[in-house]
Length: 408
Ligand SMILES: *Cc1c(COP(=O)(O)O)cnc(C)c1O
Image 1 (tube, rainbow, N blue to C red):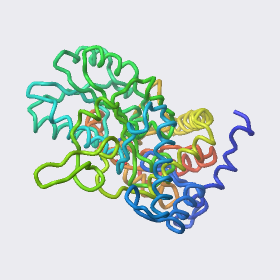
Image 2: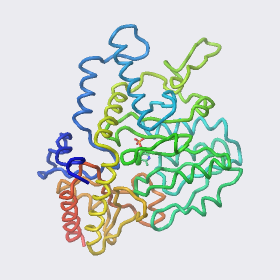
Image 3: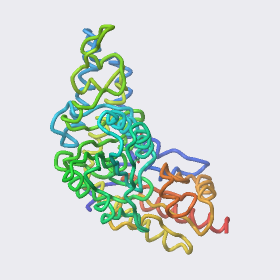
Image 4: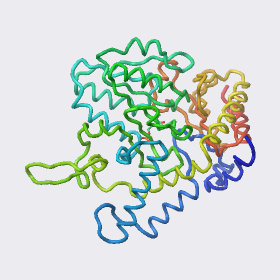
């Protein structure tokens, strides 16, 4: 990595929040797997919208409405290009990953029948477990779990053993938010398609690190949230293959999603509007597009190699602390480190780190089954973004040592 391709000092200047202090100390923000920070370039786009062309989209004849519609639809095209999606109407704006998954789970009620099987990986976020449980309860389908091993990797032999002609759907995250594991989704998609099952990949944690080519992956559905890729909260995208989106019933009824309404019968609008009832998060969608622009300017290869360097460095430094155990040691992983020190409660470590200005996550990270698997109440999770530095890793390590000395 050369200074010219990636200069973290310059990049940090784009993020005004990184200059603030917390509890009298410079902020060290290591909770990027929960949400990423927003660069000035994206904040400017959001402010510009409210200052200059705030209007409802798709309906107005007036100029502001047209400008807002153009900007919103331009963002859809940016998302389409970013993920190499064949058609722009395969990009559905949602309020985030959770919304996207619920939309698909709800729609599948029409296709799933009693006795059908749905496979879910053992390392899913609750947002990719609960909607399927609800679907299984409604339909009488059976939810089966693809197990994982101690390293936090899916046991692929077990996955193959679970696949059968009863399998209708497979759900897996691309990257685990609790462990950082990068799952072999190419292989999963291929095997599931061979037996005629559809695959939804939760890309929420992958999107900040990997630029997925959705046509090459040949995935049926892929969901992400803008706030994990330096964009605003409350907006995300659901990708669905056109053939699926045409088949799925609408999720919510309302304005914008209809072609014609009478009290006897309503016909639905074409894609993508069929799934976009009501006034969307217009400003959020535009900010989402700007966030992808920003990350693409830095370059995903630069991001991945720099974050990998941070991950290696932080892993080594943390493991040097006696009694510290890292959960999630997959060969293929991204810049998330979940750890505990002996039987100190993660919350206590997190509280002391916060006093030192260091933001980490503690708890089950919306993935309780993983914690049950390891028989722990939770972990401390430090997750790194391309704007973090080795100096910040050093501050974290010192902080963790201090917490250990205070608590043991
Ligand atoms: C953050 C996250 C979600 C949930 O995203 P929301 O923005 O809260 O809808 C789902 N899955 C994974 C893997 C995540 O990291």
